[in-house]
Length: 112
View: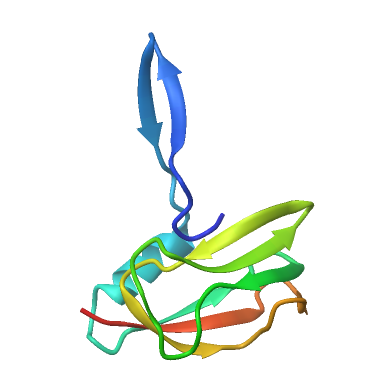
């Protein structure tokens, strides 16, 4: 699963219902970002893939759910998003880089 993924849109008895199912990494990242002002969050590759684009630069401030990086894996492009408002401390990869699952991609530091 990816950080900040769009909610599911379901039709139930003719009514649209939106639902999201965060995984443990999303919940942990959110707790870390909501903690101390210097909380660090590491965005890691959820699976092996190819970095298609990096949407932020070191030093940038990104808002909650803002796309930080696009990873192509299993023939799908997936956006990794900031779990909370944060400053981009480090970008460990560049567009065109092949990464293994679990590889460090971006380090964010929570800001208020």
